[in-house]
Length: 228
Image (cartoon, rainbow, N blue to C red; front, side, top):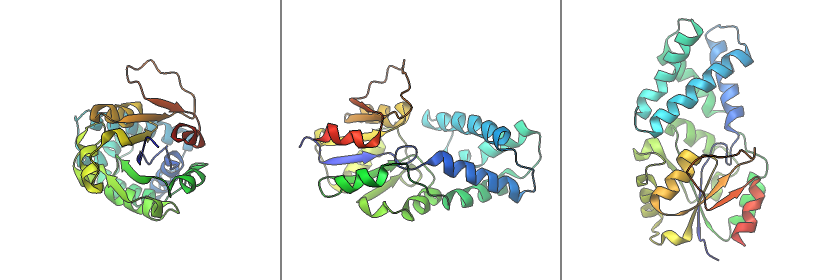
């Protein structure tokens, strides 16, 4: 067995973050008595949120600033005046309570738990991720849940992987595989740290990126074929 330790990304790898995000935004907008248009509001927020998390990955913005800045930009884009700090608080409360697994997450982990050390390494906000992951049925499968806000560095910075290996007392990188849906954070981060990577690409997207994963899968259970 080549690998002994599996690092999993959380959102859009094991958890249906898009569903959680949609529900949280709808509830937060409603809390401010703003008529909610799912196509209009969610599309604008998704564009803003994707851009600002990219800025965070590139070190252009801190995670603490990100929490509120995305809603300041949302307020400006919508032309609606609301307190971005209060909006951020309400959104994160709703998001923390919205925990949904992707299909096959449980089935996959059921087959892996007795043979591998499983660890989550996620770029996320501690309050949100601890609650969302902690309340899920798969939380018990993981020996550690490493969250970027708690560590102070985020994928693709290799330091978050170094921190994780120290936590679990592992020194041999050749025995570690990183599995995630993001080429720019999960896969690039694994490459930066010198471990093998597996790109979870359920939409079968074509990539022109220079980031080259060790493996690519289109459904979670296909990971078993790689690990056999």
